[in-house]
Length: 146
Image (cartoon, rainbow, N blue to C red; front, side, top):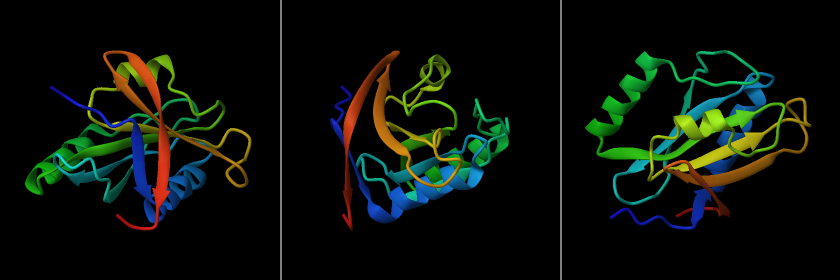
């Protein structure tokens, strides 16, 4: 039975890396994964990915890059703790497409919206669990270290 925490705990350094990636790729959507030791739920290794769609309204992991990432995680007994992407024109809430692509029931799905920022200024950072098409927002706690 899969038991999910109702909160994402993330270090300030990882938080800053996710936001920086979203801002750097604006106006296209940014995407990536934060891997962690299998079974711990602890986000540790930031893995920014190329948005193969290179689109401001859609993201797609490059299939070869994704295969390489999963092999690397398997070799290091890791799993995707966070799957993240940015929204450049809408709020940080999963779209129907995002829900369709959510195939990691144990992962936190983080959305960073740069919609009103033009890549600078204010942004939204929100986390969700998406299981069997059901979206549940969760709190985010940012800590200096684990």
